[in-house]
Length: 402
Image 1 (cartoon, rainbow, N blue to C red):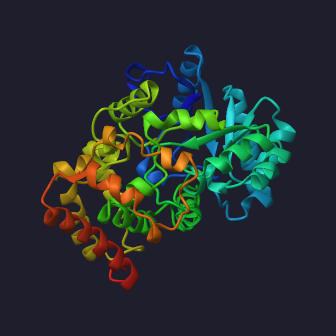
Image 2: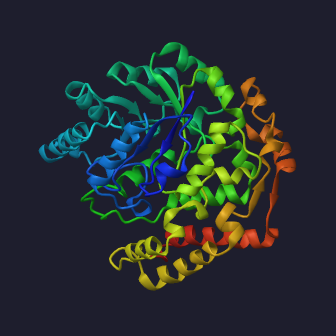
């Protein structure tokens, strides 16, 4: 089982990361007619020349390059002359620079590739939510080579993973280090939001103020046992997925610093991490936009658009959220310490099929949370941070932000 890891386009990327267990790297331009899985605001602005440089360097290191065309909504432009031609121009360029694989969410785009670009391997994005072998077969029959299974739905359902393995011939991939809620009801909607927030010429001009992110973060961080219930896979537990037939483990995030990515990749390469599990999950300190003032203030300037939101109210809110950026424990690990080694044995319960999915009738995860999770600050201080997230969401719902 090999790793698939993200590209952040930073100059130190290839020098700092251990690629010994990695087969493929993935990334995209921060904006395109087909958007992607992250808002352009959070990603580095990259030119096509840089993409070619990374493709060439990947090949020199015997790595494959997977380009993302994984936006879930294209405003129906794929069925217009302009949209279709843009898709073909993009694919022509990717073929010219010798990209190995494309990740897609739209079936029409997959068929365009398979009918016109046989040189590309095609992966199906996690955004299509493959949670059973029936959906897997649909994409296989369209010509998919690799399937990203729905990590939020079946990362802990080994019976279903085995069924997909048994009943399809595609390669299988899942994401390990996203802290998304188990069975998250918002994941498809969040995918649409991100697609439009990174889509060229969209009516909102990629404006981004992420209701879904604030909602999810507040729920998980206010009750940290939810992190254990989430789709996260510890490095020590990769062997369960290998045995179930998973071919690739995908790691995130494309917007992280190289140092953060290097630590995460090292943990999964070694299949062990002795420390805070939160080190391996997205946190403010890991993101380029929060660590580089040039990017941070550029992002704020982009965010504060008078035609979109009330500048005075938004400024006060941003100032409050910015204060969290300077609180060390929150910035690095959301005030939480989850002792990774104290979770040894945690996955066995799920591997044996003992989880019946109704947490109201089970206390299994809570028992592990009691021994593995502690706060790095007084609970009251953590609660103040959570209140900032709640107020942000409340301002959006009540219209105070607008």
